[in-house]
Length: 338
Image (cartoon, rainbow, N blue to C red; front, side, top):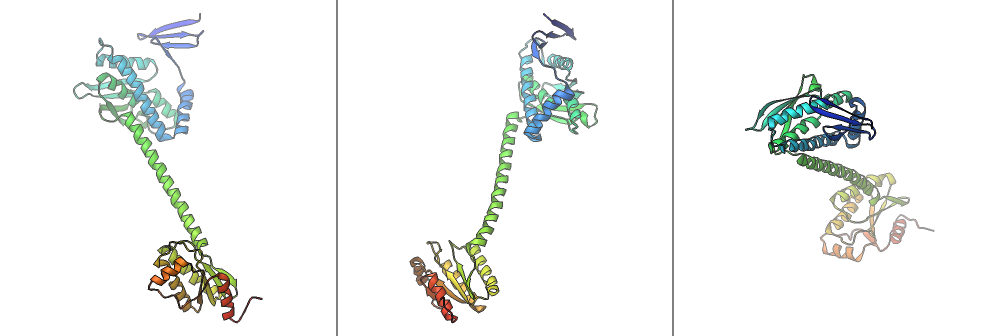
């Protein structure tokens, strides 16, 4: 059996090459190169998850792994918190986690300060070309002391070594902040962002659809010389009505139209007095520029609304079908279809 072991600073390291096993303090462990393998691992997480989500992943993972360590030492009744803190710093140093100094540990206020120097996270962030340090280790120690002090501890990074300081300085204190809450906040933020993006997309598509409706809903059709037909389709609110009047009156002169045939066949069955007013408005405005208006396709429903309204459409010639209206316009201009 190819088996080796060594004790460094009171900590046991063992290798079983036959099994491909590395054992650190009696537990299976794994070694990674920081500047290559670890960098690729973290870069890939950030690439897939995005910077904001990956930062939360590292923070939540660091905190929860710290809880495991904290709970382990809190169950060692013969070891106090101060002694456990010293053991942890030595253990982590031997594992290549960098130098850790714990200061101002106050049991009454449950506060402390941690100084981190040349940690694997600092080396990793430097290799990644980052300008701000990561939050895995700060959150990790928050998890450790949450487990050991028996209360929820959170952190605030005072400064990072990556910014040119000698240490990364982290302050710890009791807090209601939890990784679960942060995960939920990010989820809600992402959901809100998706809703905003969806609303913006819907708004864009609505504008496109409205533009298309304006273009198609009331087309001006030149059927013969001096005769144009405008079919009224669906329901007309104030915005559609104004668009129809403007479009019709703007284009009539370009067609040199003597007759405007308003085809009312396609109007919605739920006709209101507003629709009757619209018809009267178009006809009266067309008369001002020398165009006579002919109404065709008046339904029974529309005739009832007209009769009950105060608007008089009798000044316009009315016919049952579009064909009749066009024949009338031709006859009035001294022409006929052969």
